[in-house]
Length: 197
View (spheres, one colour):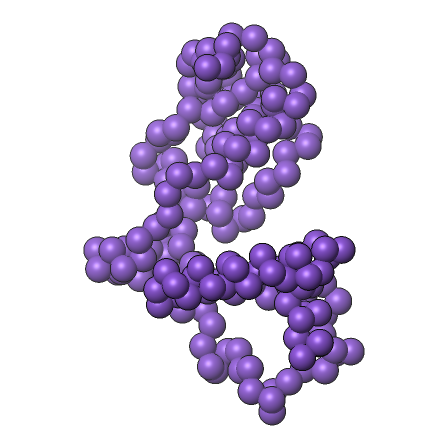
C-alpha cells in the first residue's frame, strides 16, 4: 500500500498552477460541455494538485472556474511532495485509467440523441458518424496516396460477433508482431502483411 495519503483542502483557484508538461489537450467543445456541467452541478469532483499547487488532475476544471470567476475550489493534496516520476504517472493515470466503458444500448434506450449530444457525446462516439454516404470504401472512390493529407489518421472500432472472433483477431495481431518485430504499430504490421499477400 502506498505511503501517500490525500486530504481535501479548499484552495484559491488562482493559486493553482497548470502543469507545463500536461499531455492532455483541451478542446473548445469539451471545455464547453465541462462548463455546462459545472454550471448545472457545481464542481462534483475535486481537483488534484501536488503540494506545490501544480495541478495533476483538473486543468480543464481550473480553466472553467477561472472563466466563471469562481474563487475557491476543493482540491486533493498529498501528504508529501510527489517526485516528478510519481507526478507524471499520476497525471496520466487520472485521465487514462477509467475502469468502465459506456453501454451504448442502455444510453440509446434511456436518452434522446440530443440529450447525449448536450452531455458531450459526439456522433462518432455513438457510432453514427461514418455512413456509406460520408466514407465510401469502394474501389471507385479510392483516393490516390499523393492526394491524401500527410498526417491523416483513420481510426476504427471493431465489433466482434462473439468471443471466438475476438480471440482469433488478437491471435492474428500477436502473430504479426512476431513476424514483423521491427515495427511499432498494428497498422504498420497489417500494412506489411497486406503488401505481402
